[in-house]
Length: 368
Image 1: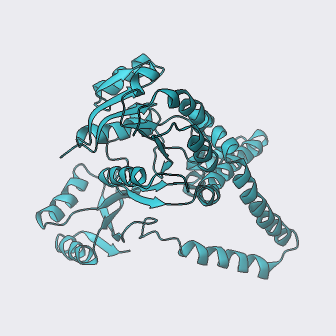
Image 2: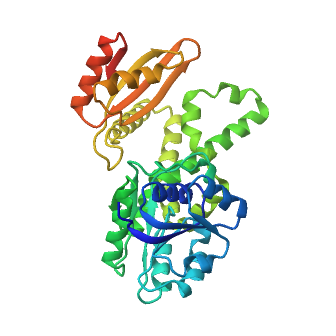
Image 3: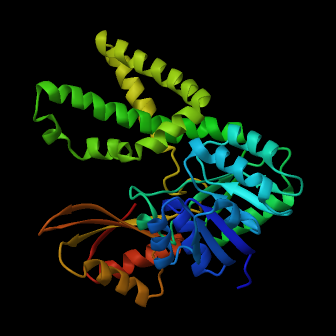
């Protein structure tokens, strides 16, 4: 495959930067991938894991002849990095970022870009609980929504080049206004993290007087608060950089929470039931089978015994029939007994065929 860019410089070889580098290197999307990091050992690890072709501690030296520069650092320092590299990048260079807030960054980056160089804001909607290049995965962007936030000043050719790269990574490129992006992401990503953290801290307050509280934390609590395990520094920066939008959605959330409190206090049975019913209805409209902006995923759930090779056995039966599993997830498991596994397929035809094949093999299966 012909490389899309001659030289790509990735500033910040962590989870996102490292995963991007792995995809670029493994798919030959760049002639050369240079990683920049303040940690020499991290650069060596990135080289060993083939996330980059070579590492560089000197940021100016690394970017001077780059065709594409990816700024993959916390949003709190993104503009500092862009300001530092802007005077030395070559004409025709494209700079993009991966931060989850966009409006302020896009506006300032547009101002900082020298003549003939271009900035394209980016936000891959993907990640992992594992931090750093050790958690990097060349398939991290596969089927992920990757938002691009061009401004009125953004060069369209530059946008199309970045979009082509995003598609080559296996992601789905969506263009969005920077400010609209920040408000929507504040609602569906930043607010949930704040709520999860607040919920955990609230339980922590209860545990001060009732030390066994966390022992009662079942699956619902763990699922609801999983995202509270995120990196504190990263989330601090996100809150400060998207302050306006986050405050707006916090006000809306606060109003809903106050209303809920009043209904509980007043024993408002009808109001509570209506609120729960409305939430259930809205929750049901979340496009779980669409994976956001993705094509439909047709799912089945299988019940299998807990024994070695059971997943390989499932995949083998389907693979022999030419059926490709699009996504797989272990839903529940009882050690030594069994559990349930979700399998997803790209078409309804494959879904129905999978049900037929697995039932013939005596495997309990149902469509979702």
